Length: 279
Image (cartoon, rainbow, N blue to C red; front, side, top):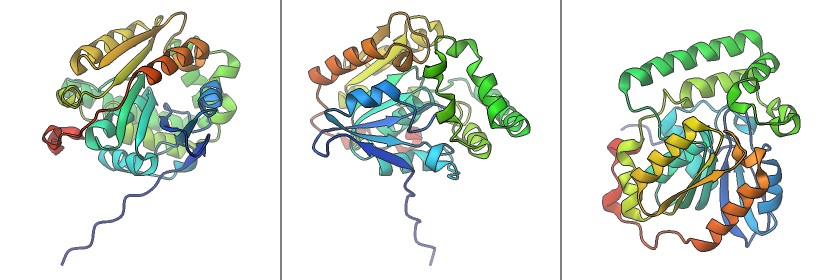
């Protein structure tokens, strides 16, 4: 007889807000952790039940070594059912949960996120780049790497306070290096072929981009077009890639308006599940 299947591990997380509040599950970006939502957490926790996840390799999940499919399962098991909100890497992961565990995601908010890399050769090249970056991280150490990471033009709109270096230093070099190898854009499957399932589910999806982030604005338009009429694009003026931290007030205003005007899909159609393309 074969060994029984191992239980899905639960990841590090925090819970905030009233127990009877509408559940929101938040997944942070690379080098962040559950403590990096700042004013977004403070505002939403007033009247929502927040589950703030530590993605594998980050925060209290620093020791978790989970390849993409296992990471998606662990996130779904830990976060539970609700509206999922993911930023950048966390948006890719939240999208993966919505496709692999449709019963878990009632609504989906993607901030500065993509569906992965379509071209197999480009995806392989990115895996190599991420592996090299992981080696560099281990060579220079966490503090130096964070300085380099946050110095990228992609994060040029963040103030010193918004960059949250002290919170990011709660991570470990080993954990972040593993996340690069296991969860980087090159390691994940291309999710574009599966996006039509979100259309068929009629899943409400809000795609948020910073108006100054040209690359992810273009990606956002592509996502909305692929998902269909239940998806909408919100562009935050005066913000770059990290729109929710750079301009929290207009982000929260748009998010709350969308939350108040949408409801999750009324049914789950099992014919939209295709395990060959979910992960």
